[in-house]
Length: 212
Picture 1 (cartoon, rainbow, N blue to C red):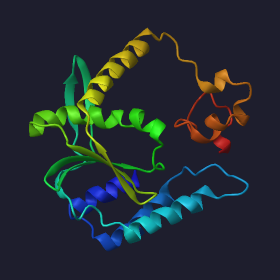
Picture 2 (tube, rainbow, N blue to C red; picture 1 turned 90 degrees about the horizontal axis):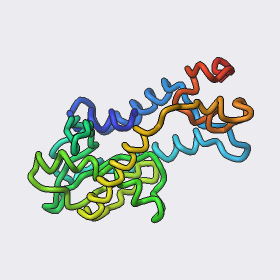
Picture 3 (cartoon, rainbow, N blue to C red; picture 1 turned 180 degrees about the vertical axis):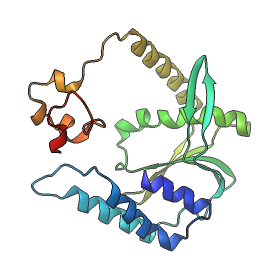
Picture 4 (spheres, rainbow, N blue to C red; picture 1 turned 90 degrees about the vertical axis):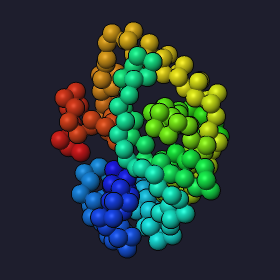
């Protein structure tokens, strides 16, 4: 994603802060995907304006001590091969921080637990690297220009490990994958297949793929 790449280039001192806005616009203009059209709201304009405001106001972690960023970790998780690429490893107020950038809106209380699983998965290789788990998890909801702080909970880590094994078991038991376009009555009218599916531009099961 353009935002993540720009942050990495900024930390690598390849670009200046004042360049980020124009570079982001360049990358967005190259993107072939657009938000679905709605009668009363242009989500493309709304998202663009929110992110431009973010670039004007955000200090880009100036009050953090950056330890590492966008580093890839390949590791064995209880017999399962995993890859983790945390957005940011840092210190703030002498506490070890694991941070991530999210384009979504700020999570609801009901969604937070399941959304944080990703961060607990990321924390596993960091324990070997720093000999400690993060003290805090910071989520940068950059569209809303907010960083939300969560305490790292080892009980949640253990729950995440159990969840991973349950998901793997479900995947291994699955014997057949049926594309959504073959599941719905009219693929052309299906909102997910038309606007959200990651393969909507090249799926052989989507007969109208060249139209959008």
